[in-house]
Amino acid sequence: MITLQQLKKIIPCAGPKAGVFLVPMTEAMAEFGIDTSARQAAFLAQVAHESGSLRYVREIADGKAYERRADLGNTDPGDGPRFKGRGLIQITGRANYRACSRALYGDDRLLEKPELLEGVVQACRSAAWFWWSHGLNTIADVGDFRKITRVINGGFNAYGERLAYFKRAKDVLA
Image (cartoon, rainbow, N blue to C red; front, top):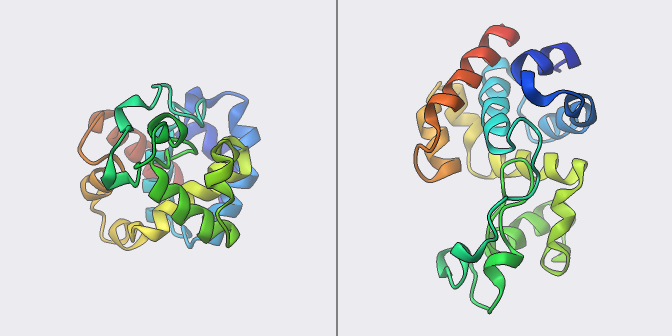
């Protein structure tokens, strides 16, 4: 799929993390059908932004902003911090952790140990699963990067940075 040299060109600030994430990321992309240059460019651009160039697999904020957010399934005290964003695309909220856990493992282990999504393989697989489960391959196929950003971010936070990664990824993968 993608090479280390390509990944380093797409995410130049990743440094040695590019080598750490390359194989698990390409395997996760293959597993979830992120298998065309259009899909890969859009996916890698979003991952690059959401993870701070592969530096973060856990949200920096404490998660208190998600407390009692029923739309995320956070109904128990402490759910906000417990189920704050993790993985390369930041799976957030009890409901999303449950859905991700059932999809990746067939059980609810991520509800018991949400920090599992901080592992390299799990961070990659959860991001690729999120992408696939939200129909983003189809949206990437028609080239609607703006819509992809809205699905992942809920808005257009740092859209310019995401778009710059996307343009670079398209050039590298062409």
